[in-house]
Length: 72
Image (cartoon, rainbow, N blue to C red; front, top):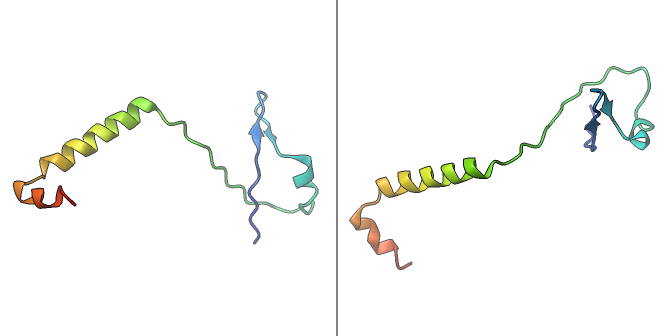
């Protein structure tokens, strides 16, 4: 089985638009297995919340004995 990574788009009509030059490389009348990956938009507020939580959890377990590593 071969895998191809190509840019594609969903039209406003809901059709999957695949570049014509790529379609020429595929054999016709063959069953395909389609995997769709969608980029997730990063929400800055979510990222900030995760950063705060990470910092809070890290500092919750901080001990004075760990201060020896502060100068490293």
